[in-house]
Length: 244
Length: 244
DNA sequence: CGCAATCTTGAATCATTTCAACATAAGTGG
DNA sequence: CCACTTATGTTGAAATGATTCAAGATTGCG
Image 1 (tube, chains in turn cyan, brown, purple, blue):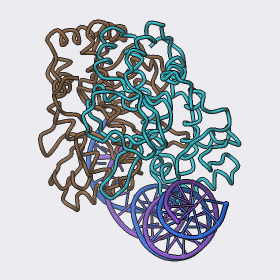
Image 2: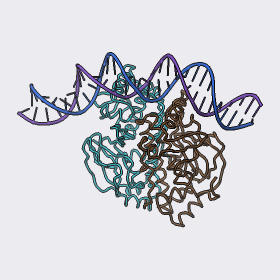
Image 3: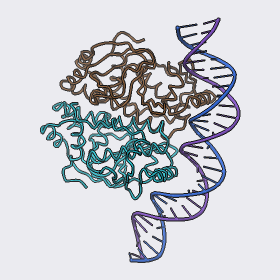
Image 4: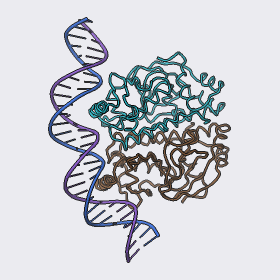
């Protein structure tokens, strides 16, 4: 669990991409209204539901997902502390997917009217929030590449590289391990695979001495090799401080 | 080829989602600087390249794509007239993918400094542009669902439903047919399949009397059946006029 | 008209799924 | 704290959807 400042992780995310003035940080702080706990496995926003606030995740893991009538489910994004899970809901007004907590979570709400205020009074801060939604889209594109063109092993390796890198940005991972409290079922729903095949794929990653994922924790033995296998290039995560 | 107003299609896209004031339309118009022709198969923006303007497509078809070292290529989005193909480049400053014209195209450039102006002086218009990038992300998510969980037939059917609907919004399709000038190779790169399998899949769609795609044109025989097969629900395209 | 690009088809192969059984871990109540 | 129960993970064997390879047909372009 992270220090009491609810925007600490968000600030790590933002300052890894651009500079923020004290005034902007204050405006961001003023935009928050309430803190809420969400329990594991709770679907706290349903596809299509009308939204009036956006949700900043401060602790835990959340996923965006869509269901198919045959019971198939695709997770389209994973979120960790410091991510806005539905900032796009600000202009979309309802979502095309649901949001579920994969672990017990803490979130902070930001009413849309306060975001309107930010777009009116803090254009640069507004652009940074816009950037965050563009970053989400960049991750979606990389997942499209994985789902469309990488095989199971590469796909899994890529996911663990991405999450590791994102965790490092917000101080939740060291160079070779991090907590990743998902079941293999949930990993399968991210990767477009079956649980059974995820199990075999993880065994293969272990067998090749690249990494291990067990007991909700990822341990990377050979980061270079893992990234090489996945063709992982963190450029799509835009971890560069520059004017935006 | 569309009427001479370079933002005609864009306005159709926007007014299908919200109201625009005359003042905002004028501001949009003032943001445009130059018109450019792009020839078919030209990669006109390369992954990683520094950007100083965004590109509005006024005629033709463009794709976003990423290559893998083994020669595999994934198209992560298709764009038609009225789409900003790299509006996200405004805050990202460089792209995580390349852009290629799939047909001869016409585009209009909007320098980033003029977009900054819009964020400073026209917050509502800025939110609408932000909306457009969120809409892109929504389409990416739907493609993730297709790539991860739909089989070849469903995936193809879904793509043709989506493009048909988007074409209708900008007046480029009637209810049961539209021009779709892609090769099967390019369709395969959208769907995460091989060319060979796309050929077989199209044969199956034809055999089931759902649709036909040949000679760069899509003809839909049974829209209901096609949408049913694809589990197509246009909600993710947000075709609803409301304050954003 | 002729050549190159695109599309089609069949047969063999391969990656992933399905099904089914079992093993292990985790959570709950006595 | 153990016993029970359910959730999660593992393995093998058979089935399947998609790929690969190779050849031929069709279309479109210069």
